[in-house]
Image (tube, rainbow, N blue to C red; front, top):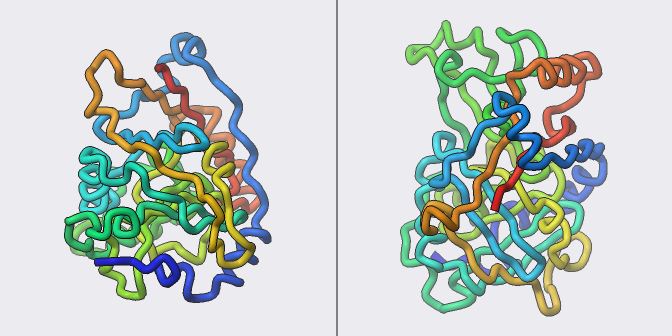
Amino acid sequence: MRFSTFAVSTLVLAGMAGATACAQGTSEAPEPPVFTVEDVEASPDAWRQADPANLMVMETTKGRIIIEMLPEVAPAHAQQFRTIASEGKWDGTKFHRVIDDFMAQGGDIMAMNGEGSGLPSINGEFTFRANPGEMPMNVIGPRDSATQGLYMGFPMGTQAQFLAELTGDAAVERWIPHCAGVVSTARTGDPNSANSQFFLMRHQGDHLDKQYTAWGRVVDGFDVVRSIKHGPAGTGVPINNPDQLTRAYMVSDLPEGEQPQVFVQRTDTEEWTARLAEADQTDTDICDVMRVPAVVAD
């Protein structure tokens, strides 16, 4: 299915002024400190190594972006975008709609080759169901009633855990909120029309939560995301000489000796427990909590 550059999704067509206002009215999460491989080696229990099969690299005209996918939240989207990256179908596409205080959108294969991705559209995966015991979160607030927190470094929204006792499948509804650094999926007004286009959140956009399928987060290169050339305020188009996604690939597709290793800070530590407790006391949204740090070893 072709997405017109000017009619890409409800994201753009409905309430863009509200989107901009939302971003401008949201406080900035503090920048995470910079860690090194030496820090990881000194405290190995404080870090987890990301699975290469879930790591996507986007090389752009502004620099490298590394994304960690979380397939369990949106398995069909993860598989589609893994296929697109592995087959090089994004290579040479443009970041055609970029709103400075909102997001950077790309992946319009149709505009580049006139044929599209050759893959079917994907049904919306705006939320997923999770058993709290099998997918434990590090939460803001009391565990039984918390509605937000972290899972494997990803921001996560959730129904209260106690509701799992009332459901037939012992599960609750969850979703990735559209915090800065989150990777999500563009679509038309049809909720089941996603295909190849994605967007990288430059700032928070909570009005998109449970309306668009988020499936990953930027673990390296967030500064690159924010440096991508943006268009006019409000619409983000047209962009004169837009930045390009020159090459995209999965880390697992590289020879083993050439694969960058990514280490993500664990959030089940005393340090993060204290940070989330402070967020509870100050009524801080998960998107305003410091992004979980990661270290890349090339």
